[in-house]
Length: 543
Ligand code: ME8
Image (cartoon, rainbow, N blue to C red; front, side, top):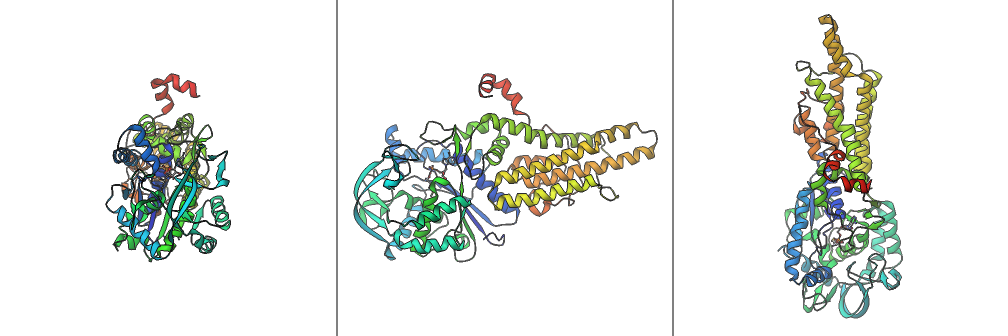
């Protein structure tokens, strides 16, 4: 349901806070932020949410290792996760810390009670193999030499009486939802994975744990004080608790009610089953509306291995922003980390991409155009009266193509392609400048012998510069969801107003205002040179 008339609820996953955030968490926030900003440019009412997943065993164990109360660990780490959005220039509308937000526990209990009332919860004695990394029991088929295939750690045998959720009841309804497209899963390969998992038969799963195993940290099972609610049942409910469930709030009705709205979860591919199978089944049981789409991104890897909090290979996103600046970091993760496939993190690539693509194609063009325009302060930048030349038309087509492809890239969850199209527009503008040689027009106009000759050359120069400013204006609007700061700078340097950036419809070539270019520092100062001065040894080692 991608109708811009309907509100869009988009959530990020809520991370465990057993250690500091890494670039995988940054990737997810950046993708969500870019998607939401793009939708807002299309006039959409969007709510973007995040939070922290506090009641996990791994949080409790991390606190034990540090010798501090779990409450303190989740509060301290939770604040670091919360700060990450600001550092990345991400704007979330809501943030739920599951152990501290007063809205959360009542929502989890209400959800539980609805499932219980529907006859889907029952208690049984059970023996299973639990992976704390996944926070899930694993089947025999999911183990490799007794270890979790993802975390490569031995699983623990657990014998307990737990509450179970009757997932087995929901195989047919889930297949129907998936097959009909009411529950979309992107990309296609992830859809296939979910579909074949559901088709293979669904087993009931444990939705509680003993208080002892949970280190007494969690939300109590209603009516059974010996158990706390399983961390995934608890965490998934954050999507509702932030909207005020079970209270009948306006926000709940707007974003998660019966009225048409898109309800989308952006997650990593490792937690697909929880979102595309368990969560819809819980909602079906509770008689609540379902998500309409699950978008699964790939992993950021280091030398082929998933970057993880406890893998010893974490890369600190705060440090990256500090060292390379926000534009470079946002650009790298949205353009050079594939949206849905795994991508290896390489700092050399980040530097090179910033310098050759952002600085080389967009920054350089902006500098050339504004500098030249400022040499002729009284020159009006206006499109000429003559019919557009074939070069003019080519540039216009490049702008139209970029517009279409940005929309396709965002709708198709291929953000790297949207950004590639914007760069292609900048490349077309550079080709146009090279062909029209406005600097030669400027020189010849200044050296012209007669006012008429100078006038013709200046009119031609005004026309070429207007076309280049227009291409930069369209570039800025299309770029705004990805690099909001850089987009604002481009618009300011063109002497246009920031409201240009608020509506995607403004990104049609030819609708530009009167430009009055302004002087300013280089938009994307080259990183390679700065790095060579700051950290020569490190750069050499990596290059
Ligand atoms: O799974 N690359 O928390 P989490 C890309 N609490 N994304 C990555 C990544 C990487 N290397 N590592 C992690 C949880 N992520 C649960 C979520 S939601 C109700 C509960 C992504 O801290 C991961 O795929 O392990 C997930 O989407 C998010 O970061 C939080 O992961």
